[in-house]
Amino acid sequence: MPFYHQLGEVPRKRHTVWRQTSGDLYHEHVMGSFGFSGPESLLYHLRPPTTVCRSKTLAKIDWKSDPDETLRMRHFQLAELPTVDSATLQRTVLLFNHHLSLSMVRPTVDDDFFYRNGQGDEVIYVSEGSGVLQSLMGELAFRQGDYIVIPRGILYRLQLTDGPWRLLIIESAGQIAAPKRYRNEYGQLLEHSPYCERDIRPPQALPIHDETGEFRAVVKQNNLLTEMVLDHHPLDVVGWDGFYYPWALSIHDFEPITGSLHQPPPVHQTFAADGFVVCSFVPRLFDYHPDAVPAPYNHSNVMSDEVIYYANDQFMSRRGIDYGSLTLHPSGLPHGPHPGRAEASIGVQRTDELAVMLDTFHPLRVAREALASEDPDYARSWLL
Image (tube, rainbow, N blue to C red; front, side, top):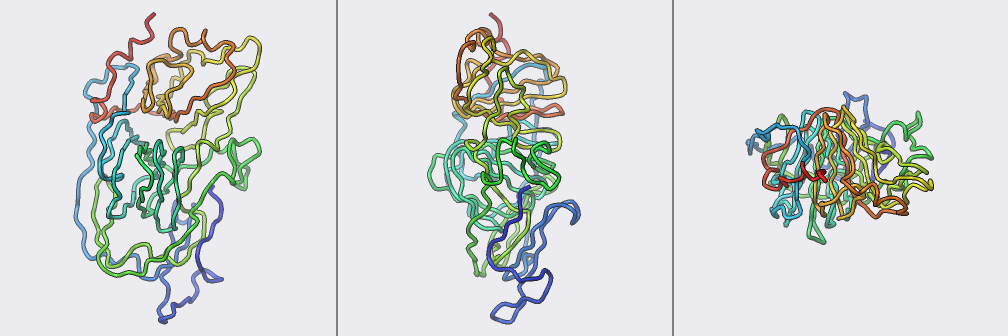
């Protein structure tokens, strides 16, 4: 996953002579993962993608964590997070461990450079706004509610259209994929999957930029941001095909799985990665057993930190959260519904909640940048 896709013109056979009208060869570029044994695509450039005029270090990434490591449930009120210019260079890191980081950004203008994350796959959840992802593989329109999956190494830039914009960014050290239980041995999504290939949107347009000059690209690798200046426009691909490209899936196309009694969180799983999963809570019917308690039971998943981003102001098991809230319930502590929420859920037929959840298999650290948004009273909010 995803599936085979082609845009633009490609020769009939791979690695064969294919010339431009000038007589020059098109420049092949294999982009893939796992040492040529994972998903890959083959791109054809007007000019070599290797022509770097100069480079310099912009910044070292050295996230600092909250010095207070006291185990407690935490709530961050991110609705009023300040706006910034860049969607890539001014992200506010919130939580992180060696498998992932979770950041948020409220950009106001387009970047005047391109960006490549060389050390992690990215999932951008579009909480507000719309625009176009411009990448080596073409243009991909996005809108509120989209998950944009960008495999590592793909050069891209976000063109912002209708705002304001609020983006939640998951950066993964491992590959982002559909859970294995949703796929057959051939990789096709199965009938019981909460989404299918029709819901996945690959790039649909491939503008060709035949321009020379100086073009900036910022690359993240080895916890450094490096600025490289190329001697031509990097989006000069005339055609490509393969399985490695950015793609989008709307949370509104996620079909909820329900039952007569409360279903456990894995039914909401949307993506799998090394060390964590991503789940989507969407509007759905509640449990239909006559004695069902729709609110979740108290639970101790002793191997997982639970993170929930609230994409609207409704959530059946919580009180005191608003749109833009983020909660962290660490492993080692039982967690469950706020007082009165289980009783209040009995007999309720549906919920209109919208939320993104991460369950991690190793503890998360709270970044110092998140502390200014923390609700200090949240840990005591279960007291009657």
